[in-house]
Image 1: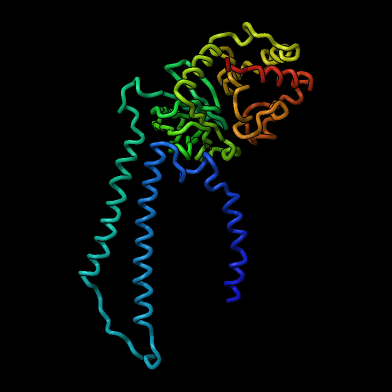
Image 2 (image 1 turned 180 degrees about the vertical axis):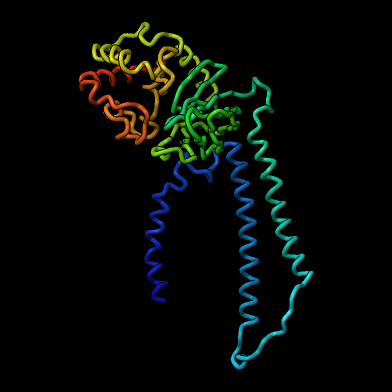
Length: 346
Ligand code: CUA
């Protein structure tokens, strides 16, 4: 009884831990599906959960019933019940029932597994193609038909089937947007397929679901589901941003102008703005429009400065070198000012 009371006292702690664990946090829960794929996957989870509950209840009932009915009663200390071995009827029963249950589970699971990873069922004009590439520890998104490359913030139109071709530049990651569905491995040298659809406008958190190094748990991205009209607008703006040279026709403050020079001399071998620059780090064409630094930190100048000085202070294991010693504080300030001018919003 005392032990019981002790465990009861731990209950509030357990509930608090559950609340803090982010179960059901908006945009992150697989149990709050916001799209066709996620809904089908949630229904699969529900079927298996229901079957398991029924099994637990039936087995629990039979077990309790047998324990009480056939318990040793006073005066039966030396009693040994009749010994039987093998009962064809019973053995058939407990072999056939699990087979039936497994079939009920297997048929929808297998058919949906194939259906949800099939990227070739719709007309080309009805779908949006996106190539996803996992890197340690960020996501690259390429829209091949629109000729757009971006990172971290993935824009998709609401209600449209989006087909993803998923791969990786380094090691195995996994692409997962809990509220919309998934997950699918991102393997180097191989392309895996997945399609998703969002029912409602909003920002959904995506994450990496395969242990891939020290910042695996920080490998977030944002999925921005917007109306078809807004999406077309974004594509137009991005295309314009991709085409024009980073410095063309833009009025910059003196500091941003200085930052642009710093960027050209130090950052462009890895980062591109528009079509100019390296492909090693994230493309920064619409950097100023993004939601987070590194996928999860606040999108502020002070965070970006911290990032430039020492990326690993925010994301352990990040491949970008520290610039805290190479650049002066002045240069880093100017660089941050420049980066926050990189917006494609018209
Ligand atoms: Cu990438 Cu875990």
